[in-house]
Image 1 (tube, rainbow, N blue to C red):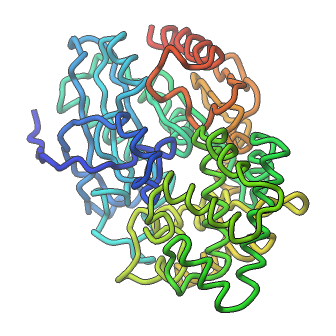
Image 2: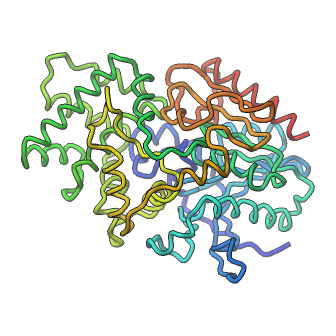
Image 3: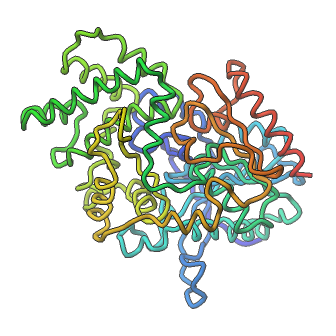
Amino acid sequence: MKMMRAVCVLLLPCVLALHELPLHARKGRAWQMMREEVGNSDALFWSAKIDHFDPSSSATFEQRYYVDNQYWDGKGPVFLYIGGEGTLSGTPTGYVSVLAQNYSALVVALEHRFYGESIPNGNVFTENLKYLAVDQALADLASFTDFFKESYGTGESKWFAFGGSYPGALASWYRTSYPHHTVGSLSSSGVVNCIADFPEFDEQVTTAVGSRCADQIKRISSAFQRTVESGQEGWDYALDLFFCEKDMWVDDFYYMIADSWSMADQYGAKSSLCSTIMSVGDDADDKTLMTVFANYSLDYWGPTFCTDGFYNTEQLSDPARWETNSRSWRWQTCYEVGWFNTAPISGSLRPLSVNMEYHLKQCAAMFGRPMFPTINELNAKFGGEYPIASNVFYSDFSDDPWLRASVTYSVSSSQPFEMAMCDDCGHCKDLHTPLDSDPQQVKDLRANFETYLWEWLQ
């Protein structure tokens, strides 16, 4: 067996994938409710190629992974959990762990390159980010699988991949690029359709929260715009409500507040959001509307939601200030995958200035050159909303604003799709710990998925 370097780490609350909370939203009440979804495995590292497609280069980086063998009987399958746009701090618990117990499976989780501790060349400078690409990430998965089979003696075990959101897309794309490395995958809320200008995100939030709550969000958005546009005193007041840094662009701030209410819907908390902001009367003034919403945001996401490096363009452009995970994800959106949340032409919840012009201006400022995501190339290669994979189960949920970048129906008999229609059923609802209180639609979705899991593992 090859030698592997094990490192005991202090397990901070870290994101496993987009279905978990992003780094800047993990100091509030929402994260306290989600922490149980992160396992307690020790970190391991393997040497991954920095560039899988340059035969003249042998340069490597240390890529982090985790193993949970508590249920494995030596013969069961290997469940590969695909890391995404954030730090990976352990193997998943939740639904994947339940399945591992039922199938006597070994669970392996691989951290995505350029996130957490898996940073090629140790930096996220623009010239180094050329190695942060979907094809490189997929090649990591394939090369790691080969390494793991040899190192752990699991050559006879069947591999099945799990991913949520962007990793959900990777779970589908992995089946296209490397179909012999797994027997199937679950693409939970998988954003397989790369879209640059994505106002449908906001449109789905409006649909999910309902007209009365959406109208109240519009009132709050308008209150912030009036205050910001009133002059320096108003701008400072708005920034101070969220403890934001003073050099933020105005549209960075508008994007931040829109993300706060959108994420509440996305992560299954629309009822909490709407009940809070609807508690004020129709005669509430702008300061009351803004304060009620800001207090909700700070409580739910934490007091550093605005300052932890995800929204401020000036911070994302400064090596002395940027946060690695946030900059890496912004590169991926600017360079390849898109999904820029923009204001719909009519009925928008967010200010209309949060548009493609803003996002592309931010990309250019962060990375020092004009950019536009290569969505056409990715969709041509993997099929977009009509994936060309096989043995992939696609799941989605009615409150999820990302569902409009996913598949919308069963693509084929080997690519089934199921939507759970239920209140507070948000992003990757199926990957969380199964509870007796879960809506029946979610229970049925999991049961249907498991018929395919069983079939594909045979």
